[in-house]
Length: 323
Ligand code: UT7
Image (cartoon, rainbow, N blue to C red; front, side):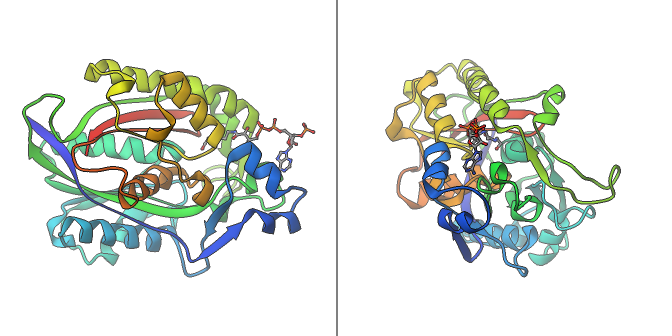
């Protein structure tokens, strides 16, 4: 059977690093509060010349280099983002153009922080359905552009960045030993959309709007939603938490990550953490953490890797990959 195998990975972060202490001059907060409540110590913030498209392109080029491929070898791009360069066309086609691709097709996918998990699950279906042979799946965000910089309850939490993978169709045996995507579970619930949303848009306010979040409410639901989809993936694959080599969760809050890992029975030393360095980068968070896990020498070929994310919508999902 066809398996969707990750062949290359890369990331890109804006030049400017903003430490927690800088927020002490902007809003009524402290480095201590931010570290204790979230685990975040710093985040990268895009300068004027850095956009979702430019960061996504840089991450894509690194993933292609890592795979030993060029844009000519790619026939499809999915970009997960909630902060596109423009309302339309899709930022994915701008990345396609920046990469010099005049073939294939590209589109954006919008599932907020779950965007990358949705996109890689979609990529798997396209590859297994024979609609593409080799794809770029990118998560890229510039959330700094939609933050209310006077709102201490949200502005300290988010950052900018991008991560990308090259995924290609390969023959597998159909078992757990295959490399590639082995199982996935996606969910959404629109009744919860007022808990985390942007208060503007082309069809309502004709503005871009700002991110609004009832943080405590999101926190309350997060661990339950995450563990539900992960347990679904475990059941689909016929495995338990002990079989996992690496857990790469969405990086929103260290306390949510710790509580999810504990509830699932995943040991701390198997969890990849980047929230301290990047903050919450929404759809970029999982591929940024994956890249860090590979570059740190944690994730190696053949490892069983569990990805998970949850965010606005609500949307949530988990994916199991043999690296
Ligand atoms: O990626 C999408 C998913 N998003 C998330 O996963 C975010 C989920 N939520 C969270 O991570 C947490 O709820 C937060 C980090 C947003 C907040 O942590 P919390 O422990 O839930 O704090 P809280 O909202 O209950 O607020 C506690 C206090 C409040 O003051 P009072 O009402 O107790 O007087 C807040 O006003 O902390 C106050 N507060 C702050 N204080 C200093 C809120 N933000 C700040 C701040 N600095 N930046």
